[in-house]
Length: 115
Length: 113
Image (cartoon, each protein chain N blue to C red):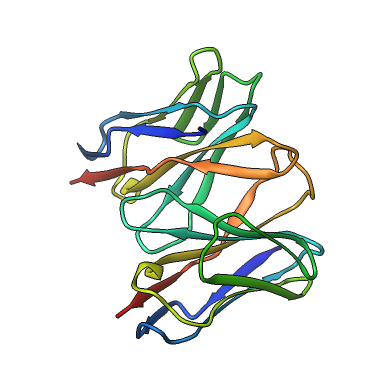
């Protein structure tokens, strides 16, 4: 069966510090991978998605970046955090490189607080 | 602009009672509609997925309906349990050739004993 892991579970970082959140998927090959952010009282916002190693598409311009160094590893980074980067970050994976009704499976999330 | 709106924002019901959550969307071109359950501090978990041709789909005590003409969906929860307390998120997928989802802000349900 497939599982998705995220770490850390919670993180408190000062403004201006770097960020690295990691997501790994087990039990599947060549998944689509996604990073979402959920701000308080708002819907999930897609930040990045990837259809393969080294292939990253950005949905929202910001000071965050993503990388996919391995097939089942997805990393969200920032060189300098802003207060507005606080939120709940979710990684997800799905089958199918193109549309369709394939399910997206979400990880447990990382709660980031920028102080 | 693609949008998903949910109502009510929050709801409190007694254990054992039924409830219905609403979702209106303006996503085009439409591919499918999903309902997710999200426990506090956890990732969303899928309850149902419905395509254009499906009017209703059930998952245990959860029944989702879809009216593609009026672009409305509902999630009915029968015989609520304390464990149903969570946020319920309506999500619509646009048929853009890639699985991009538009998320509603959710309905926060509290089932009280």
